[in-house]
Length: 268
Image 1 (cartoon, rainbow, N blue to C red):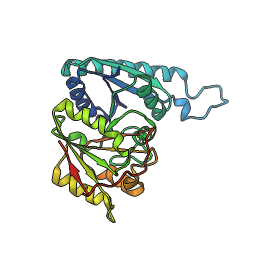
Image 2 (image 1 turned 90 degrees about the horizontal axis):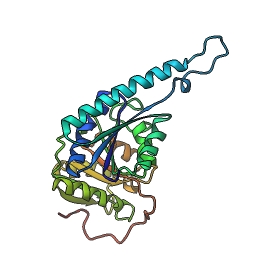
Image 3 (image 1 turned 180 degrees about the horizontal axis):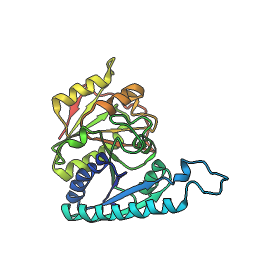
Image 4 (image 1 turned 90 degrees about the vertical axis):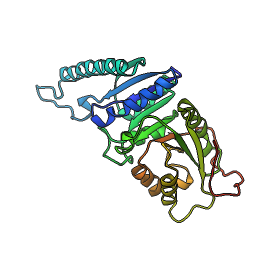
């Protein structure tokens, strides 16, 4: 389980595109994949009725689950054969946000790899989506990809860590480092000491110049670090066209340490 990569699927093509990225990571760390699909019973959407005919019919829910299990089993078999990695699968029932968080915690998932749109969200927007809620509550690192980011090469050459100088913002570093090490990729760091009027614009400019394959940052569950809160966080999530490695530390301080002399630095 420690080297298991969890991939949430919802039947959409976009969600499925995350599998290739997850499989390449699993292959490089001698790990495995866990494909998870969450079903919400029809009773959660349709009020109960006192009529003679029960709506929804529990038989329909059972048929949906049976069809989903068959589809997921076939998908797991195909992914394993194509990528030469062990693949397991699971169908869970309930709220997608809750069940995905529970699945990642129960299995001590090394990484959750997912896209930002599926049954619970709209393209290029995390706010209010299933993915956003999982990011806010999971205590496992997540590799999150927009429809543009998921099209990028699965082979990583560089990882950029964003920090505000606090212990908590640096908590994503170990996860970024092991991911980079799996690919022999370079690790760079960007720290904004005195945030400009539009920090997201400065970050995007830096990304454009350095061209990292993954951008890594911490979140405190209500938004990203203090530099990346509110509309800035939403803007980064919508406009950064590459995978974001996001981690929510639970036992680290967000108070800034002494600021270094430069606004940005890089290390290999």
